Image (cartoon, rainbow, N blue to C red):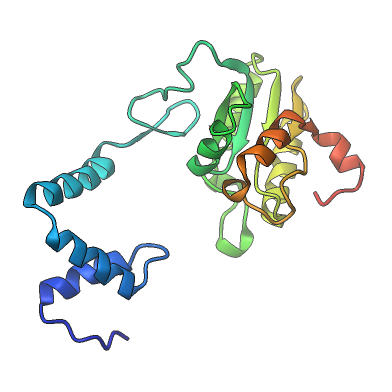
Length: 212
């Protein structure tokens, strides 16, 4: 329950909106609002306009489900990328993390989450069917499973492996340079880059008795 005393209802309302953002407490929210109050009207309008445009105009690539400004994202439309290799990731932040390594030249497929029964997320809630359609087309040579090294990530990896193993496609996983329990966005670029470069066959990992 909020016990702070605000001199303005408008100030309190704006602070409450900022405090609703992940990782933003009320003290930080108030500091941000007071900062905005000090800015010129043109700067505040530019700030608010960028947020509105983000919500209204942002799209998802119809091919890989990555966030994009156009129907097909810049990565999928890049003819210099290797379209025979698809890296499967959980979300846009993972795409950004892998791109920052400059070690991967294929394309991506964003699942939009991972299988998590505790959170009510099942395979049908993810972009798995469209991934299988791509593989069934016969032009994909390798699927790189690059999900977080958590129980939920491993469960999702295994589910995808079982769905795709009937096709003539190599299924690999990133090397375990990323510590177990870690999410890709928190791995440093060198470690993540090596994990991508030194990826291994998923089936070999499974047969070696790792946690899948």
